[in-house]
Length: 412
Image (cartoon, rainbow, N blue to C red):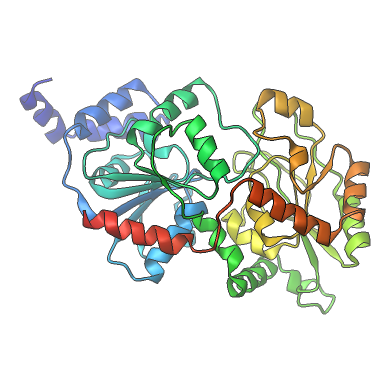
């Protein structure tokens, strides 16, 4: 395409209409959309050295990117931070989650791609930056923080996902890691020769800060109105358990546990009134329904998972990676895995589930036995051994270290 014709098309707003039509309206990852981006952004735009573009997999203020942004704001750094909201229907809710210092642009629009093209730094916790064929040019830096850590599930997906993932090594400048185990996973999958920043994960700093843990506990109590249950309690004496399973996309079927039995079992073991919070995976939130009651609450729309974890006393899951963050608190974790063999066959594990320090149950009776036989001293020793074996180097200083690195990059 000649320069004159390209200029004419751009000035005629054809490119803008192309972005809107193929990305925002049709919501398809089309080859035509890739062509529009390659043509329009193939030539580098003027980069703003203090501009940072941030995106999480759920298009919200969450996970590692959230805590990096909060640290930048806390330190009052001279930066312009841009992130995304999913669509016009989610804008109001998403805007409430973000601090006012962050500018929001709509996902998969020309405004989003313009922000990417002019940002010095991209921060991602998934494969967002390689998914839509957006060119990255010299002078821009792409940092991937990923959204799991020490997790048992093998990384993978469908053919389109794997094709996009294969491009990650070419454009990623740094991966932020928290363990030698995670370094090995990254080398084995998408980032075969990308340098590591061995800082720990920003989202896990909170587990090393007792004051912030208490603040978040109180926020969870208020959010679920546990201080308004009519029993005269302020909610602090409740045993709060979280059940949050992983997403299933193959023939492995989700089997919900018997929450009444879990409640009875936990109350018998810990001698406290139990509240169970159920949180669906973000891909299941719109379709996964259950009836709430006085002791069973829906936490699917609470916001960031990491803001919820400090408020709970017991974790129950299956293969979800959040338990490998929550274990840093040394609080009890139990795995309810009735489809263990099938899930392992279809998705695959990096290590046997028996290597974890968690109680493992394939049935409700087994789950009750795990809960009743829980020993805190043995569990803490098991957590330490697991973290040592995986080479975990979390210290609660990741945010500070990452911000220092960002400053260096923005000055180059």
